[in-house]
Image (cartoon, rainbow, N blue to C red; front, side, top):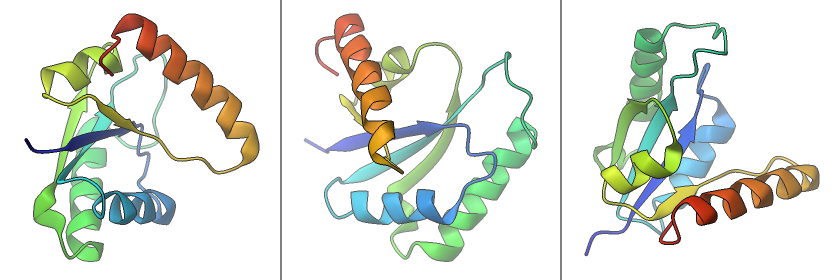
Length: 117
């Protein structure tokens, strides 16, 4: 069975930190889905179409195994999207120790919504 991880975010725009995490994740997982979140409450710098294109181009230019990375978008709950895509793994990055508390709360809520994720 293929191990697929979903890496969700606004990617407005994608950064070197995002690229680094994707590269490292490809050492563990068979496929990474970079899922750009559509949030009507946020006013992104780039349109969804631009973010999709910028993200795809950055991945092609910087990741040799780019064929194992898919760029997509989603609306609604991340856990629903992850399940729909046949995954049970959410990939998250931590920039600082303070991010850990926030990410832990997200992980616990996602687990309450779907115990398999």
